[in-house]
Image (cartoon, rainbow, N blue to C red; front, side, top):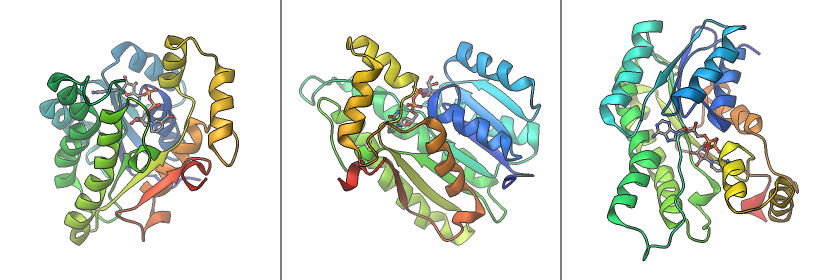
Length: 254
Ligand SMILES: NC(=O)c1ccc[n+]([C@@H]2O[C@H](COP(=O)([O-])OP(=O)(O)OC[C@H]3O[C@@H](n4cnc5c(N)ncnc54)[C@H](O)[C@@H]3O)[C@@H](O)[C@H]2O)c1
């Protein structure tokens, strides 16, 4: 499939996990891609691995929670590739604490990365979305509708992304801009690899837990989420806006 020939996509958090899978799939389907990440070393590693098959990408080391940096990423895409058609807001961090334990600074940090960066990147991109077929895909989570223990800040931000998605969808629908979210369930990425190692758990523990909490009895893969991100970004989803698409193996329907 080549659904994105002549399209330019920007992916935040593109150096790992779901974001990296989306970058690779966009390139496979003919898009030009700018991906941003604050992990410069990992971003360079991904860029080097892509160089053998494509020149149609740029990597930017940036913290997208910084509004000027978010603007800079979009500016670079326009400078290098002439336009931006698609924005995938994907960055996310977690903090493990209750509302009683959480400091004002930790709220600022988590909401800055997980929520405000989505708004900042959209603010920078939307003025360039002057053609049919432009769209934003926000990576939310099953945590838009369910909660986890000691992840109140993450769960709050993910629920807010559903609101941000609907709000941006209605405001920009007159310009033909579609805005949707994907809500992944348990997807084994470097994010979870770090988490289970810190908790002294194994991949088998993670798989067993995902099996118990999903209808499909397994974790998902970054590629399975990327497939849904690209669906929402493509003209195949031309009648979808303001939606949250759950990519969770049936977790939230169980
Ligand atoms: N993995 C899952 O099970 C799962 C489930 C639901 C939702 N999600 C969401 O999917 C998204 C991607 O998660 P993942 O599992 O692929 O994580 P990951 O940690 O593997 O990848 C996230 C990337 O974002 C980058 N990043 C984080 N903050 C940044 C910032 N401020 N500026 C630039 N780059 C930044 C990280 O360096 C990393 O490369 C997140 O929004 C996460 O909340 C993941």
